[in-house]
Image 1 (tube, each protein chain N blue to C red):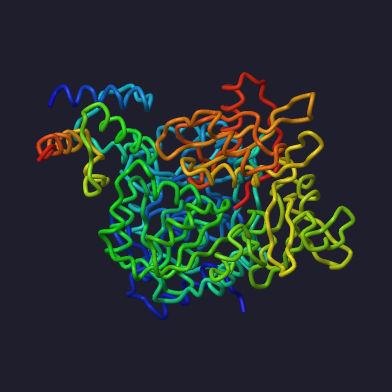
Image 2 (cartoon, chains in turn brown, green):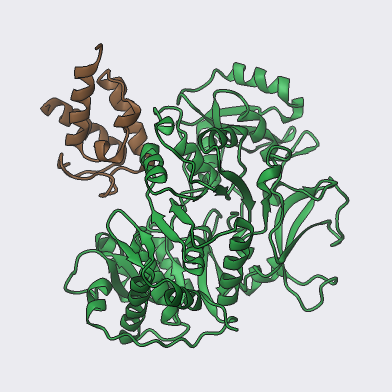
Length: 83
Length: 528
């Protein structure tokens, strides 16, 4: 969990140029750290980096706006993978 | 009878006070509440010294509050000046200075960024937290006893819209109350807007197309659903859940909606309520049309064209989209669109000339810029006493009268003795099964005049081997039209209004990647 947050924070910071600390509960779209283009790039990055595949139902604002929700989603897809 | 945006709202409030007007994630308002908020906003502005005819800027994210203050500025008899929230300091300063803005309304989150302007204009908070140094309009509204006081006539200034997408400073396009009222009724006529309309609004309120969604709503008593498009599945869910009937978009929004890299939930929803999708701001590719038609099986697709100087010029009858998919259609009601040669004579069918617009939506010109106004807003001997918009766009008309956009005059590529339209090259490049979007432009080459370069994006996000795309294009295009350079982009930047490809930035980035000194000549304001 920690590692995933770390990896995601690093990625978001390097892509957005945002310098501060990222609160895992913060809504990154609301805070304008992510926009409609970068959130899709983030999805691509996660699928490749964590070897998961998101389903249509996963790809919603609610699931992807905060780092902690993203981690929950990654864990869910890791658990269902191969079933 | 005076027709104006405030009058339209007053009429609808009489008729449908308790009907829902605008809905967002945060809150919704009825027409009566919206009217109350607009009146109280006007009172706030007057209290703080705003007078009739003063310019008031609005630099906010899209919220119900933004719609309230937009209408509030109009009820204060002031002139609305939308400012893109994403603009940088120097550009905002230019708009404040150039418009002579007396006040600017922003949100509390943006206050830090814009507080430097407090020395040159009054700052108000139109949405968000109450901060002690700044008047907060939503807070103040609760304590005000609004008075109704409208003193504007149709010829008065209603808005100045600054147009991006050009080198040099953005130009302010001056729009009268009559322009807005006429534009509203013209669009309502050809789209058939009614009280039953449920409009999905993914557009921003910083330009004419987005603002027109508010005008349609209050004119007809429709309901507007605000949505910020980030992930397409959320939009699909909204369309189905709220039985959205009308969806105004732009080509870039369609590309985002049907992003090939994402699994889309289009099959999980019922979109049978959707009556139409309309689009302006660039041509619709065959892929876009197919995606829209297969997803929204009952929706008519309106392809439209316009320039901010005249709001809207043409639309294509949805029933003709299959027959003339690349046409921009015919003139909107109460306007005439002509193709004129260099002598001002109407061109023969299929001959390329300048697109010239006359009629109700011709705006008042560029704010405080008589020189540029005189170039674009001109008389024509056939129409004494009238001012027409000479767009500078190259276009032609076929035998049946359907219009086709060729290029902006300054975008034509002169290569090997040919004049090539970037649009024609782009149309062919996006026909390649892996290409999503393309932007073609000229690269200087003394030997042949100019070479053609084309930037493109793909569905997979990966570059295509140059030779395979070139081979493909050689089978589709005459040799002189095959680009000498192909530049892959992960994605294309868009202009501030979240709708149009930012051709200037794409071109500059491509020039850098090709190691060519930038030479961007592009002086005209934006096309819708």
